[in-house]
Amino acid sequence: MRFPQSLFLLAVTGSAARASSDKVARPRGVAPEFAKYYQDQETFTCITSPAVKIPFSAVNDDFCDCPDGSDEPGTAACSHLSRNSPLTVADHPGNSDLDPSLALPGFYCKNKGHRPSFVPFQRVNDGICDYELCCDGSDEWARVGGTKCEDRCKEIGKKWRKEEEKRQKSMTAALKKKKELLVDAGRQVQEIEDYIRRLEAEVKGSEVKVRGLEANLKKVEEEERKVVRTSGKGKGKVNALAGVAKARVEELRLALSNVRQQRDDLRSQLKELEDILSKFKVEYNPNFNDEGVKRAVRSWEDYAAREMSTGEIAAEELDLDMITRADDENSGVHWQHWENTEDGCNDSEILYKLAAWLPPTLVNFLEDQYFSVKSFLESRGFISKTEEDSGSESKALTEARNALKAEEDSLMEIKNKLRDERADLEKDYGTAGIFRALKGQCVQQDAGEYTYEHCFLESTKQLQRKGGSSMSMGKFVRIGSTSVEEVNEAGEVVSVEKIALEYDRGQHCWNGPNRSTKVVLECGEQNEILKTAEDEKCVYSMLVTTPAVCAGGEENDGAPRSKDEL
Ligand code: MAN
Image: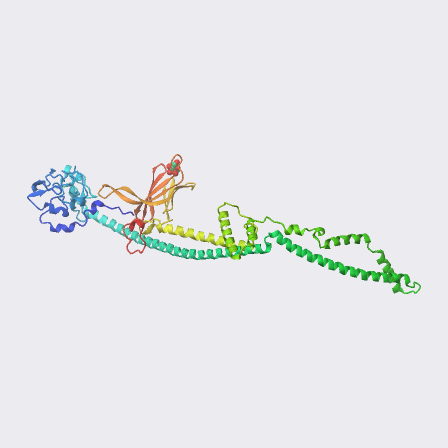
């Protein structure tokens, strides 16, 4: 159910109380609030043109005397005149500067048993019963052409009261829903504010971590530099490696010499034994039939036959001699060459070489300056990153760098979330932010071959009822307003300003614009699409009811006000 407003009837409401002050009977068609102008029974002064005075007998004589038509409240004699707002005229009686226009809102119908109202003067005595405005039929008092309009106020009033009761109930339910929406919207704002506070605390925590990790990285970098400086002694890593390798080779060479010495001792012992056994073989008595001695002699003869050739032994000895020689020239490794190599001695090492001649405090200062200028130039791409910074850094340095990068990324992510949430709080969500509570809620309406869909503050869609394909009719842009022409209860076309949700950048229309939709909102108990129209090719309008735009309900809701309310 929607709730139209009747400006025409509103003008009448509340005027009855003043009627009791009337001293004389009011002329036909005069509403109680205008009775005061018709008190003088001798002379009538035109209401907005007091300079014009006529005999009272000329009132309602079916001849238009006054420029504002006030002398003809009960006939159509002045109906050719136009009408300003009834309030304007009633509030400024006697103001002759006003345009000559009707001073009265229309012919007053008492409508006993229903609500009083005004009928436009053109419809007085036109031979048609205007029951929707004048249920007592008093507008057709002259019975033109035999028209007799009986009083139907009893039944019409009863029906109206029943409908009005329904309307009021629906209005009460709509207001209750609106209040719930306001509470929901307020709660959402509260949640966002809480979330923002949490994010702010996280940002602070993360910033502290970043500072700690920056300091740690600096420390690790410094340590790394010291390691390179001391281990390389200013000659580079190959030099350091050559130093270590040379020491190790020397150890092994000495061990080999010792083993050769032990071997030579054992060889001379073996020679002694072999000589004993050779002698034994020559000198033993074969006639002495001792089986153990005979077996020992045979084993010796087999052993002596297996003896290695002296040529092989000599070659091996030569190799071992070469390996165990202490001088570089003949050992096969030219240590001097490696120890003196400038292995891509980089720019930072030049600094280390220089450092050997400078005081330590100056060295530290120069180092810091050097590295900050270098990293500045690298970060801006003026120079390329050196190998020392990329591939060859220590595990500790990589870990420190990665930990800092991870924390910086996380800080950036939190800051982005914070920025988005703050921006959302600033966004226009309508009066008291009520549309927050409706955001994302969807309603549909079947119309012809399509089902139309409206998702509040998100999108509008046109769905094929057969086949189910979906066409975007626009994405939410802003909450705006639009003026809509409406026919009020007096049958007049009036322009009313309504809230409109605007959606554009929908699917492109062949030979036309991108689809767009204006969703005009009306007060109603339900969120419901009443009508969808394609006003121009691919330019759509929807009429949607929602409790969110019903009047009132914002008081004591605790929800924050929108920017334009403050
Ligand atoms: C589809 C629908 C219509 C629209 C035409 C334009 O059929 O979206 O509403 O007018 O395309 O080609």
